[in-house]
Amino acid sequence: MFDSLPQHFREHDLDADIRTLLLVRKSFEKGLIRTIGDLYLVLKGVVPTEPTQYGPFAVAFYDYFLDIDIKKGERLENAVARSETFKAWKAKQLGDDDRDLDFNEIPEMVEKFLDEVHMTSYDIQQIIDGADIFKDDD
Image (tube, rainbow, N blue to C red; front, top):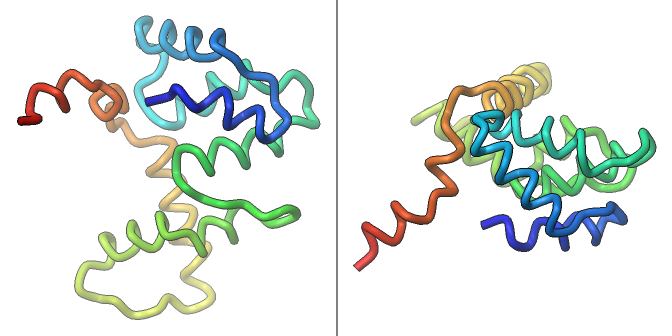
């Protein structure tokens, strides 16, 4: 699943290669990565080599894993609010209530979305484990 990850980081002028993938794999094996938030922290500790690369790293990470396109100079919250990923999550949260959020509700919903993405105890290993997919595939 992560085969294109180093290339994606390189497209954002970040150093990443097969060693990045090996480190992620080893982190999974040691139980250090259980959520997207854990993966973000592990990669943030490895890929950016200086503080000026934190911004490009965040842009690359959110684009690759959550399909959130952060435009140059745009705040993360604004990029999240206009993303299809957030809109789908919001629709699931609100259920049948498909009304548009008012201006004051958007930051609160974006914060809740980001908290769930980063802090959930949802096991990411189940998502990326190809064995289950192949086992159920006919």
